[in-house]
Length: 428
Image (tube, rainbow, N blue to C red; front, side):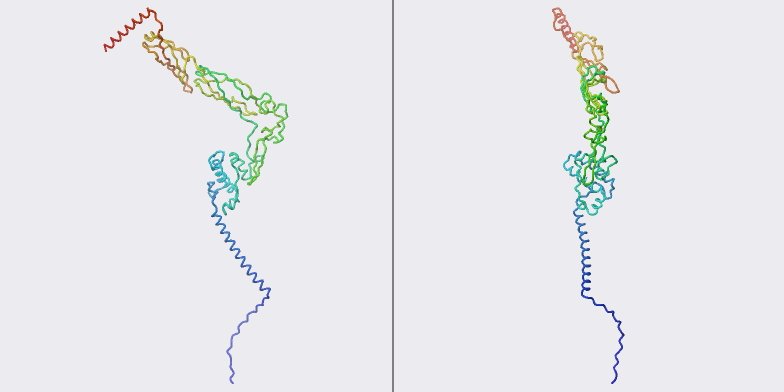
C-alpha cells in the first residue's frame, strides 16, 4: 500500500497569548471607558451652553453705553471722560428742568461708571450689560460743580488730587466781598443840567474799629479752632458703591476762620464790620436824566474779614424847575409880550438855563409863536459834547380894562385897519 504524503503547509507564527483578565480588572476598564465618554459629553455640552448664553446675552443687550456717551468702542479714557462732562452739563437737574432729564442723567452716570473702569468695560465688551450689574451712582442731588470738579475724579476713581483730605477746595469763609447797596437822591434841576456834587446819606457796613476788620479781639491769643485744627474746613467721608468720596466743608464751629470762637471780636461778633451812618459826596455828571443810575465802585458795604467792598448804585431823581420844562437835552419856557409889541415888533430878554438871552420879536407876531435859541439847552453826555436848544413860546397880553379915551383910540385904530384891509383886498 502506497504511502500518502500530505502537502507541506507553512508554519503560522504563533500569536502571543493575552493573559486573561480577572473579573475585577475587566470591570475597572469598562468603568474608565464610561467615565471618559461622560467627560467628553459634558465638555461638549458646556461649550454649547456657553455659546448659547453668549448669544442670549447679545440678544438681550438693549443698552449701548458707548452710544449713550456718544463715543466709539475704541475711545480712550480722555474721550470718555470729556463726553461725560459735556453730557453732565447738559442733563444735570440743576440746569435742565425738562421731564426725563434726571433719568437721562442717571443713565449717563451709569454708562460712565462702567466704561471708566477697565475691568467692567472688558466684561461689558465681552458679555454685555447683564455681565456688569450696577445701579449707577445717584449724582442728581450733587452740585454740578462738584461733579465736574476735583471731587468728580475722587468719586469714580478714588484718586482725589493732592489736597489734604481730598476733594475740591471748599468756599472760604475767611474773606467775603461786601454787599452792593442802592439809594435814591434828589438832584436840583441846574445840577442835573450842568453837573456838580451832591451829598448822599446812607447806612452801610464799616470796618470794625475794635478789631480792625480781622474779627478777632486784639488782646486775645490766636488759638486754633479745636474742631478743624486751624484749617477752617472739615472733611466729610462718604462710602459709595464705587469707593470713598471725600469732600471739604466750611467748619461749622469757626465758620472757616480757623480760630477759636472764644477769641472772636465781641463788638462785631467776628464779622469784622459794623453798621454805621455815612455821608458821601458824589459827582453828578452834566446832562443827567431822571432815572439815571450811577455806580460808585467800592462804596458799598465793607468786606467781611478783609474782603473787598461792594459797590453803591445811586438812582437820580431830578427836582422840577419853576421856570423851565426839560425834554431830553432841550429846554422850554414862556415869555409875555404886549399886543402892541406883537403888532409893532420888539426885542425881549428871555431866561435860559445858563442866563438871560435877548430875542428879537418881529412885527406881526401871533400869540403862541415859538422861537428857537440854538445851543442854549442842556449839554449832551459823551465825548462829542454839544448842547440842546432852548424854545420860548410868546404869549401876547391883551389889556383888560380901557377908559373912554383909550377905547376911542382903539376904535379909531380898528376902523383904519379894516379900511386898509378892504383896500388891499380890492386891489388884488
